[in-house]
Length: 270
Length: 208
Image 1 (tube, rainbow over the protein chains, first blue to last red):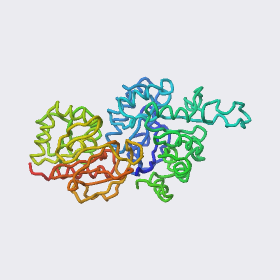
Image 2: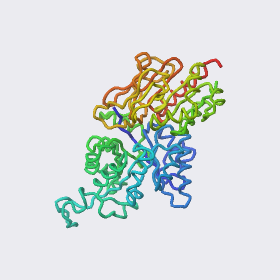
Image 3: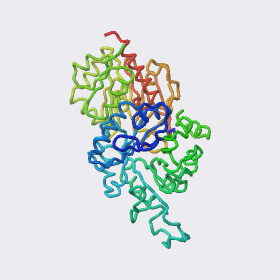
Image 4: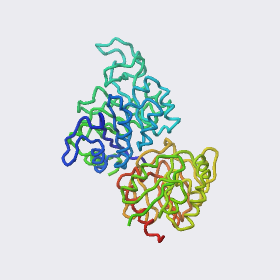
């Protein structure tokens, strides 16, 4: 049996946590490593760091982040943001990261996925997909006259740049399948429609991708209450749930989330 | 008492996380393939990620197979982690097969998994099959973090722990001063740190 996972996600800019510092008792609320230690102590199963640093020193900052995390945090962690090559991945994995997450770099050059899988194994490669609904199959959308299947095999488009740019000719389910065939060992699936809404994960999207691929799917975007986490796993078929704001702003503790999942009959590590 | 533990470096896998986890529990860790340094240590950890045959090649190239056997004979505690556990056994069927270090009886096979996807990745509860200094204070069925496609088949006397993934498989073994775990204690949070702390304690208890 593999237990279902709860994964806090930390957005990091130039080595500092970007949002969510509503914690008491932290010496330095902006330090991602200190926050990561806190989440580990509370029962987080894994951590994901998304680096959004725009500067030229990007590579150095994410390697330093991986190194400091590995020095202090003893659960698996993933680094995403700015991984564009085998060399980029090698640097953060050598520093102690367990996996790398790729998004726009894989869309620009899908071979990156197989290169990473060949070098490090599929277990190190996470494909991050930002998906957003763009059509209703059957043409019932009043704002879109596209026929069914126009965007591919699903109704969700693939976006980059924080949901601002649609990748033409890609749909989320088809891209997830292709990415897994190319070597991704896990799918981090973010609903751009739900992200930041607190209205719950996009269950139809999560279910569509979970049914289409053989690898674990991490549901992301929209968690506002603990019932949403259970729903993503039971109704959505997710293997893990990613949470950011509900933990960062102190609405819930990781421990509470795990206890709620257990109470709902979902096997978790307590 | 702080124990000195040598993490054997044969050029495969991430040794840094193991080193930092040992330091976290108060041990002194050295990543090395130097016989003098390894002989000075109270305990030896054989880590590893990757393919068994390639790992054995590199171990032999560096003469570490003989060094490991020598340390075993000297009574020094040895802990294999993940691939390092598998290497302690006699042989594997991975990639056409290869001979292992043979410190433990039995072979290594691909997980049966019973239709589940291999590799087995994630947190799975581990059942202790017997008492051991290595797992003292850690409840049976405590989850540990796994990333693997193969698992050993130890003799019944050496079986320390098991986990289920489709089928039940051996994930911890022990014979005298030789220990091995299929999971990653260095990535298994408090339970993993406790196991490493226990190992450091075993190392410290052996008279030099």
